[in-house]
Image (tube, rainbow, N blue to C red; front, side, top):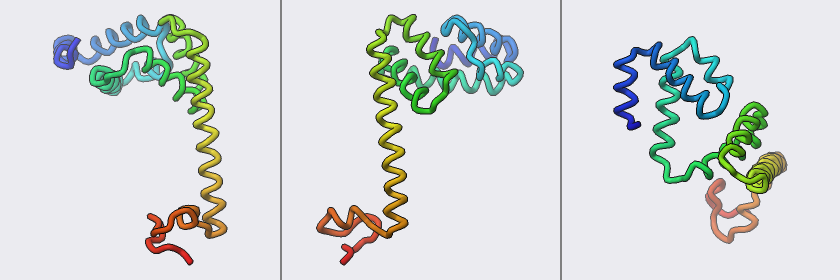
Length: 150
């Protein structure tokens, strides 16, 4: 369905009926109703807005669904959201995404999280010691200090 079709269905059915239809469609897609959608059941305007937003992102994406699902797995792993991770691994399995591909997404996420922890911590350590690695590496001015430190 197009964005206009989605809006037309909402206007025709009304927000409560449209929200229930959306919940059924989400449950059909995922094989279960994710908690966040269940939580929004009593707030149809928020639910509808979230789903319209999600659908707009998916429609405008040039990524295929397999890639999107692997990204969802990686982000869920990086955020340490066990509910999201379980759901997306289950959905990926239903999409015939291999365990090796799922593992690769998880390992990449773990690597990025590790790098983020190290980058953040080492920057704070350098700031505490008033060290600027950019000034040490660059022969010109760094973005932080402007002129090269002596």
